[in-house]
Image 1 (cartoon, one colour):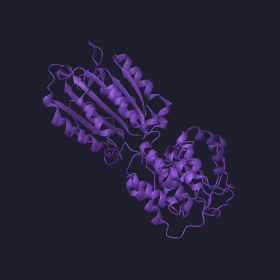
Image 2: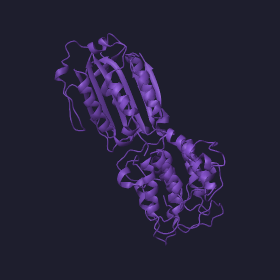
Image 3: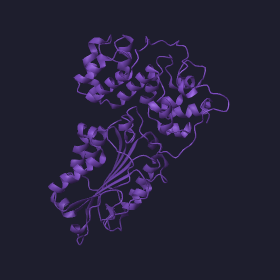
Length: 458
């Protein structure tokens, strides 16, 4: 696709339909200096129009809101291509607004509440915002000329006060990068068209630049701190992921529901299913269209079984193969999960009396193997954690949650750990705890993750 050619209206419609409310708000905020439009579909038309006053294109917008899947799907380009073009960009307002959008993704709800409380005396509304979001807060402060690209001390001090030093450092870094004094900055709409529009730079005949389809993974993490974020999976606060919980024992579902809902996952829970119903559930979930809107898929299963299968609630059954579970959610079987991290956590109570748990081999890493455990599919972006324990331990505490999921939930509920530790580090800590707390418990891990996965928006 030639970057000087606007995309068809039907493509704009499809793009707008795939945006959630937070992403739409971010696009409106990005264009606030150049457009008074309040409908994101109308605004996308303006961005797509070469004659409009908006000095950047669709690719930059999709990059900033981290919809790299839409870049590839509709503009046939990659995050890396747009990132290279943005390196030459000198627009302070665009960089500033991109920074604010990035910060909004990293704020916890409690952080936002604290910010509004701290800044309420500075605002005409007294902190009573129509839409309680960080971008709404920034917009109100801009209207009162309390912040702009050259005036960020108030925001910097506020992040210091709520102990978000990481966000304070982002503000400091932005200020340091602005080597030249910022121009006079106003929130006007009739701004003359900038000659700095990166994706629509006039070129000589025969020298037009084209976007080409490539083989880069869609789920590359964007952002301006490239050394840190290029190695991370994309995780957005509002669309963290989808979590499927299948509890055939009945002790862990409530705990896990609360944990993943607090992480902003959409959660589906099924209890006490038989093998036939299990397969139906898995296929229904694999075929859901909403996977395209989520960044992580989590499947949690608690059941009696063998090392290689689960029985669900069936007493006389060959069981359901654990390998089949993973294959149902491969990229080939479920295209909307292609390139996204797919996590499986299995708590298996080994029901066979002659099962020799002591001889089970714990495997760790993407290349290890275990004779007692199912094989990992030859596909990237899969994480498999399988906790096996003798059924007698379940009989000893028939109504208590498993130690495996109790401590996993504790680790995931710790905000500081989620910020600092990626999934493999969290799992290592979980394994260490379980080894000290429960004899005869074996945790088997394999993965083909290609990046670091944090349960925290980047």
